[in-house]
Image 1 (cartoon, rainbow, N blue to C red):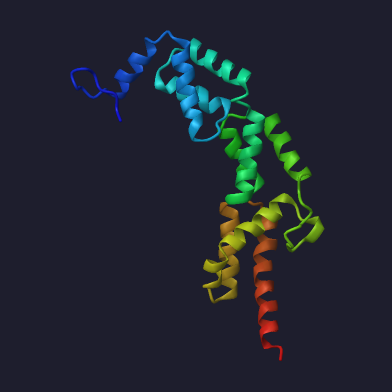
Image 2: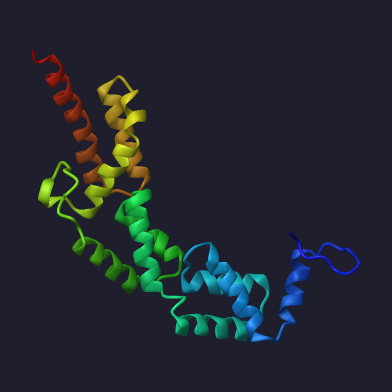
Length: 202
């Protein structure tokens, strides 16, 4: 609910910024940052930008960020790892898309590289029974998960070539590289052929 003055005046965005700029109590800014973190994990840059846009003084913003780092409530490495795990589990995306997302969250290039390298090291060796078995990369496993999530919609496309094209486009939109898009979209057709052959067996 927008803040209102004692006269019932609804405060505008610029008025809120002016009021916050006059605040000199570090705890007020720290509490604002903590509330921002209650919704979901955030990167350091997200918290800094949120507080700055809200209108708080720069020195108090930096003080709040430093305190949150000290308390362990802010940690870009943990944030990045959690973001990647969440993507792989719930909304599979390719490495290039994940890299761009983390960069937009303000993580530096070297940290992103380390997080994505760890993703490769944490691969489960194709335990999901994918097309590539033990040689499947994290991106291939993620692409397979995405195709499984959209399997019902893809199965409604009767023409195999169109179904392959839609699978390719789906993977491409989600940041998977062209080779994985080609391989996994073709695999959709191969699975259909194998399923059809099994259906005709006596």
